[in-house]
Image (cartoon, rainbow, N blue to C red; front, side):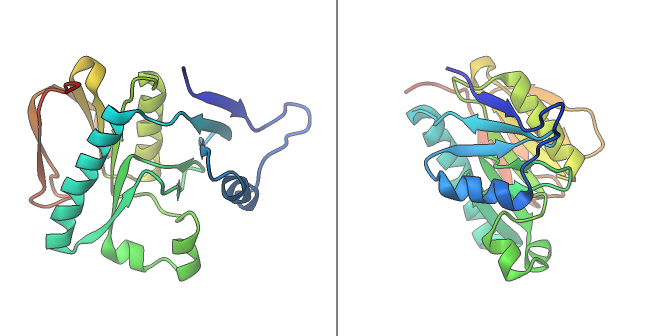
Length: 196
């Protein structure tokens, strides 16, 4: 099973969903995980299985515990859609936004899809995800101003590290990851992915 993508524009009529129409589409279909790329393509995400959900939850817990101690920002789950400056509406598997940037948003902006690029994102490739599509998504994050991103690829036992203005780095697992200057003193030990 793969993700389903639908182009939003029709060549002759140039039909696009406005931001409000996209928001209403998502609200009207709460059982669907819908994203929209910067190119205006609707992407319907397949629900993840138990292993991917468990791994995703672990990453959110680790990030949340670090943030609870430092109080430097806000942590978000994969249910949060961010309205990216590049035009896409994306929901990372985990995200973090620096506190002053989050507080600069209005209450209405925080309640809907926040019009902000996270400072840090995590994407975890599930069994049904296309690696190329996730790599495009990571590039979209970087184009929108995300400072640091980790793309975990259990199928190849690797993690891809994306940094603003730099070429991606690919590390084999197991490895120790650093939050660098984006997430000061945050580190994550990532072992080999197993199905146990």
